[in-house]
Length: 309
Ligand SMILES: NC(=O)c1ccc[n+]([C@@H]2O[C@H](COP(=O)([O-])OP(=O)(O)OC[C@H]3O[C@@H](n4cnc5c(N)ncnc54)[C@H](O)[C@@H]3O)[C@@H](O)[C@H]2O)c1
Image (cartoon, rainbow, N blue to C red):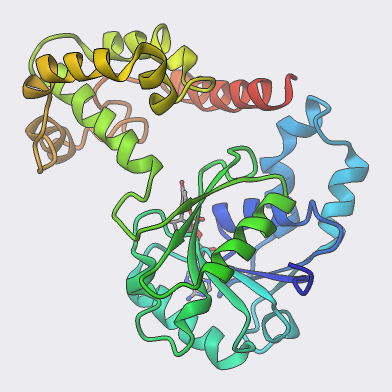
């Protein structure tokens, strides 16, 4: 941790800019962003953090201070790359591009520079498979919006060292994140496995005609969704008792959705071009006003939950 000062974010898109903003919260860090294409990093960060500024979560001075610690380059041979102590890759979600990016980084960075990938779904073992120093590579899965959601899943590959994983956890903690260690490189890591187990059942409830989509969401929002930020499923199982949990599972699990394929309804919607907010219809119909409101309400809610503003 003490040797980490120069952070490099590779890929300055939506996630990269937000991750850069997060790292610049630590005054000990100098943050470089690298991208193939020129992009206005300051304008992007200012847009993404406007609500935080408007609500007084950060001041203009704090934002300017963070921005002053961030530099941008399109030059892979820049000192921002060569001097990096800690790299987070956030380029396109494409295995070939990610592997090529790390091969270029390995040719330019020190052998002990820590390498992290922000891939949402791709295996860190697979992304790092062709690197020489695989022990210094882990996944760091930030959640969108990256400047607000505290969780970062630190995912060990089949070759990551414990020491590197621990250092990455400490660095993330130092910039205000809540890192969790995923000890095995499995699809979906920790949180998406649970999230998509829930989505599979939710879609199945709609598909089986048990309830419509809006009702499914209401059942979540006004019941267990309310207590989830305070009470996770493992603590909840102990609270009600493992004996009761056993009895419930013994009765109900045989009826829950256990398909290993995406649902036919999901496929049908996709094939009909009903892909959700982007086309105005998915499981439900959406006007442009409803789409804008949903996006704005989410950030409002997160800021209230996290900062009380
Ligand atoms: N969008 C999300 O909700 C989300 C959440 C968590 C993780 N992620 C992951 O973060 C990564 C980035 O996602 P995003 O949503 O920011 O994408 P994005 O398209 O907004 O940004 C990707 C950036 O990478 C740049 N890029 C592409 N190829 C490059 C290369 N070879 N070298 C340097 N830069 C290159 C692009 O120019 C672009 O600016 C992906 O791996 C994605 O899975 C995304």
